[in-house]
Amino acid sequence: MKRLLEAKGLLVLLFALLLLLAACGSADESGSDDEAASDDTEQTEDGNDTEEQDSNDQAAEKLVIGFSQVGAESEWRTANTKSIQDAIKDAGHELKFSDAQQKQENQIKAIRSFITQKVDAIVFSPVVETGFETVLQEAKDADIPVFLVDRAVDVDDDSLWATFLGSDFVEEGRKAGNWLVEEMTDEEGPINIVELQGTVGSAPAIDRKEGFEEIIGQEDKFEIIKSQTGDFTRAKGKEVMEAFLKSDGDNIDVLYAHNDDMAIGAIQAIEEYGLKPAEDITIIGVDAVKGAFEAMADGKMNVTIECNPLFGPQLVDLIEQHFAGEELEKRIAVEESMYTMDQAEELLPTREY
Image (cartoon, rainbow, N blue to C red; front, side):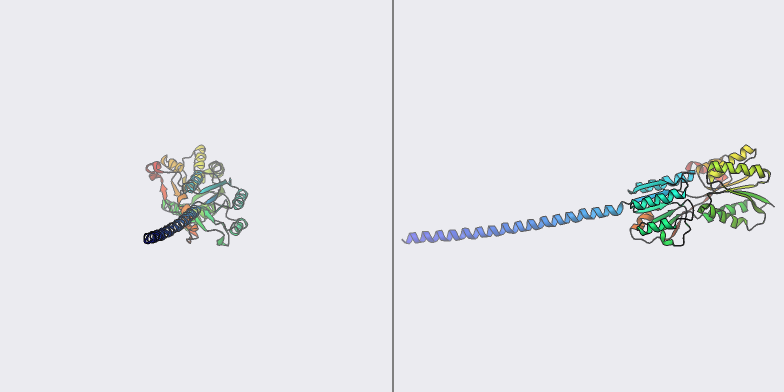
């Protein structure tokens, strides 16, 4: 009997021990499952956070940019278009491009299309200075920042655009005037000048004329005897110069062209008329395109004032700075120089446009 009781007690003890071990095991497994579940939740949340952050970063980095260009009227414009297009694409942004073909109505239509497409930013070089108030207000109302390049607009409310990046056209005109005054220091005068203006109403045409006249107006011996638009094109420059030569061929001392393409067209007209460009008539151009360097190297053009078109990367940087919350100056100038005939041959191989 005593042995039976001892055996029963031993069994009870063993049973209790087993229950205790089972309970401990259950508690450990439960704890492991809870921790695993917790770990899974944290990993899932962290993963979601990472994916969401990556998505946000990608959205912040990639922009849809609408770009309305004036046209393709010159070597300068072609180089400028390519610089901006390449810079936008190289930065990983999406480009929507429109060529206005030098018509303001085309440009306004393109900008409205960009607004409808809900682009992130609009870049455009205005055909003329005026007449853009309404469409710029529409862009502002749609909360789409506008970046002016190369040419400015004449609008009272400067909140309608984020910034202007481009050349100081008045200063370019001054450079042309200063070069001529210095070049003609020993000439008694009168010095008769014919002027090939850019597109009527455009910022470079207005400003380059203003800067040039500001300088030459300080000396009575300089006189602009003819001034007419050549629309910034080589063909029109040649056509207008032919008319100038027909009426005043023997009295023209200087040609001031608002861009090199018109100057190159005029050079053809001068040669066909029987005169030597850069000798019989001093030739001043603006832009510093490769064609001007070729003309100077051939002794047919005296000087070109640089208007640098290769500012695409600088423009993209400004757009990205804006979207990063940085405040931009309202006008940012591109650094530029001036080149004369005696520099042309050496620099010609280095010209990018």
